[in-house]
Image (cartoon, rainbow, N blue to C red; front, top):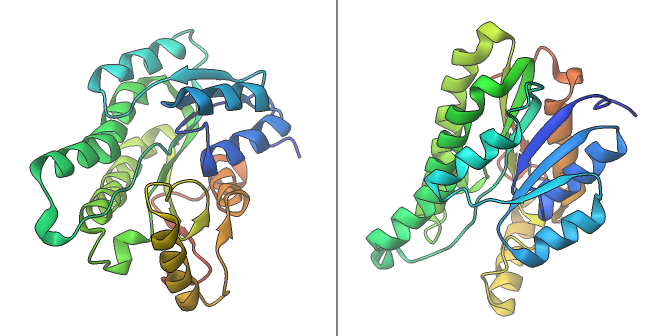
Length: 245
């Protein structure tokens, strides 16, 4: 397939997990890539995996980092695809949530993508596609993930507004809603907690298994490609039927 031949795509959080899986596929389909991440080891692995990609150390939680992203695409060629995928998760009991805990996650998961879209909108080519990564946590009602769920729910809300605002330029905005996907995203959990979590999730997933990064990325790439030319303002769950959305 050559869906991305001649197209340039920027993926935040593109150095691991779903983002990297999608980047590898875009590269294989002829696309030019700009990837961001924060961890040196992952940045290095992404450079090895996709030698032709431009890989940038860039932290979505830093409001000044958006200028570096704009500079990376300020050559007049613009972007044909923008995947706002960067984010992180942490859990806490309701009574343990502090201002620092709240602000850190909101800054990375909500303020970051909002400022990135605000700064990069002028660099989106007419007819471009924007994909925003949310999470089924938005709909699951987990008692331990209230703040994380709120950040991912906020992305659903702002994406609907972006879809309206950018429609006049033929720019589509859609939301990817991954469920339990086999990545390092839950690395903050102990092995015991992660095993228990995944067992609980799988017991509620109609397909009876954890999904792969490649399966989630495949849906994002459909939305980024011209195959989804009449698709905007939508949410696409990749969750094995967990939320039945």
